[in-house]
Image (cartoon, rainbow, N blue to C red):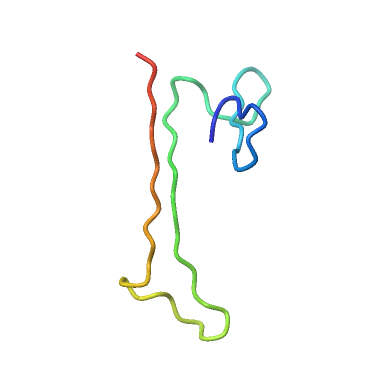
Length: 61
């Protein structure tokens, strides 16, 4: 996620400004991850099978 993806393939652009459906520069944003059930077994993964997601947060100071 970025304000400007500059053509990166795996990037989601988050707009700002009047009339946009994005997140303001001073607003709080949340990122949530979820592990889904397998379709065939209708069972979720065990904790030892989960590859944990990572998020890097950059601030301009």
